[in-house]
Structures are given as C-alpha cells and as structure tokens.
Image (cartoon, rainbow, N blue to C red; front, top):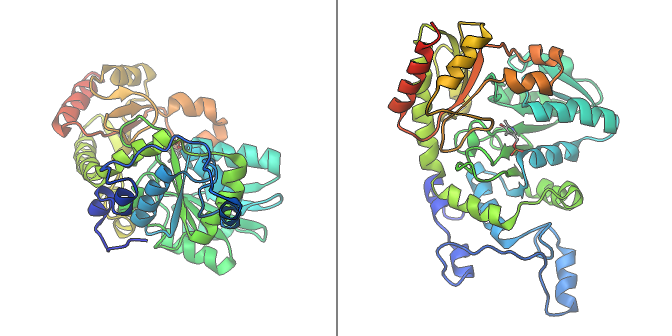
Length: 397
Ligand SMILES: *Cc1c(COP(=O)(O)O)cnc(C)c1O
C-alpha cells in the first residue's frame, strides 16, 4: 500500500489521492453522513457485491476514516486497517474474530486490565471460552499452556504496567507450527517503533487514544492485518457489533498523524532521560523501562523495537501508603489520571484501580506492589519534569 516508498514521516504528512479527491483541500473534509446514495439500481447492486471496498453506510466505511486507515496500514506494513470506536473495540473484535465456544486462549498475566477482564470473565462466562494466563517473559510458558483447543495467543509487548516483553518472533514461530493465530496489542511501542505484522503476527491492535491520537482528545482504536482478515472482520465483528469510528474522530486522528513521528521521537528521548534520572534516585528501587540497560529484557527490546514509548513504572522504596500519596499529590506538572500517550505528563498508581478491577489473585500475579507508580512522559521540557519528580521525591524522607 506504500505507493512511493515514502519514509514514515513523509507518508504521514503527505496526502496524494486524498488531496485530488477533495478539490485540492489541503485538509480533507469531515464526511458527516450516515449513508451514501447511488445513481441507479446497478450501482448499489455492485456496491453490495463488494462490501469490503464500497461506501454504502458509515457503520462500515467512511471516506474520512479510509484516508486514515490507508495511512496506518502503510505505517504498520499491513495490507489493511480498520478504525474502531476505542482500543477495546479493536481488541474485542480481533479476539472474537478468532475464537468460538469451546476454544482456548493463551495470554499474559500482566495484561491490560479490561482486556484481562474481557477474556477471563466475559468470554469465559458468556461464550464458554477458556484461557490460560502465563508469564510472557518465558517462551516455554506459552508452549506449556497450549492444548488441542488453543486457537489464539494474545500478546501485549511491552505490557502497559510492568513493561515486560514477549519474544514476538519466537512466539509466532511456536504458534505457526501449531496452526494457532496471534493477535498483539502494540500500543506501547506504536506502529512506528515495532513492526509486528512483519514479525508474523496475524492481527495488530492499538488504542489510538494513546500515542496515535496523542492530544488526549479522542478515544479510538485500530485493527491492522491482511486484506482478507480485515474484509472478514468488517462484515462480521465490525458490522455486527458496531464499534465504528466517528467521522470527527477520524479527522482529528488525521491531524494527529501529521506530527506522529516527531512526537514519538520526543517521547522516546524524554522518556529515557526521565527513566535514567529515576533509576539513579535513592528513593527508587527499580524502574521498568525496556530502554534501560538494567531492564532484564533490554537486549530483546533492542532486537524487536527501534525506539521506545514513554510510559514506565517505578517502585518507590517506601511501602507507606501515606508517603506514596504525598508523593503523588506533590507533583505539580504531572497530572494525576488514567490513560497515557498524550502531550501532557501523567502519573498514576495502579494500586488505586487494579484493586477494584481485578480479583486479588490476578492482581498479585501481575506483580503490582502498592509502591508501584506509573508515569507517562509527555511533550514538556524534560528538565521541568525531572525537577517536578525531584521535588516530590524529596518529600518522602
Ligand atoms: C488504553 C489501552 C487500551 C484500551 O484502549 P481504549 O482506547 O481506552 O479502549 C488497550 N490496551 C492498552 C495497552 C491500553 O493502554
């Protein structure tokens, strides 16, 4: 789909066909329409014969979304893409595409909590789908968990709380040998820094609400994969469950993609600076960031990613919940909130929601301790962020 072999940065800034299709408008318009009219019986008949390509009704395709889908597919090295109303919309559609009643899924213990709940509770209770949660850092754990009913391995690398990695190529090789499909949540590294489709995964999903959107003003998702799989998802999981992207959201996303490579470079650089600062701080036990040489899977990270996201977690030395609260409340630039990947730096203590979202055994299995703090490094001057963290850390002792 990458027509002129453009570099990622050019691809995302440049519109070729879209420009000419819209009277030369340098920013394509928002198509705020539910349906498309046809000039005769044969034309609508043809459209229905080729639903995966046609504009019939905006629950399936919308021209504004298509521009973005083509850009994202080219960026990820995938044949096609489908935007969805949220990251969870992409995750649930991609998983449901591969499993049915009686099947078995293998996934990681430290999975994004709503995906964990979807698999472990929703699919189990409503659809009779079984699941095994493994320590994804051990390749043998996947092999041990696979049984004759396993249809899907669902990965998230790096995982968004612990930043732990899975060896993507090795898990793909294992899955292919057994005829098992692989879906990966690639939100952390983004389609810029980790090319999962080229590593052989069947479908790649993202929460576009994070780096791809980047401005904390949209909730959206995307599924990337082959034309064949995407055409099937379009007419099944997407058309029937209806997690469609709104026209305005896809227009905002096109705006976001113009600066995506520049933003990711800034996130990569500032994130590493902040991670190194925290790692050297006496009140910090350890920092989970795959770009630190102290990270247990540093080498693997270098092999499968060409850059890093700026979401990281670190463990405070103190276990005293009042001191941890004081630290979080003392931060001036880091805002307290969920989500990540936007222009603004954020802080969050996973202990706040995970204790409510997940049963204690799952919570423990994820390796979350009360002193675990998660930060998303935004686009501010990193020196200001480091100063902010330093002042708040100084209060602990
Ligand atoms: C936020 C997030 C999601 C869910 O995305 P939404 O757009 O909020 O539905 C999925 N995976 C990861 C890793 C996330 O951080």
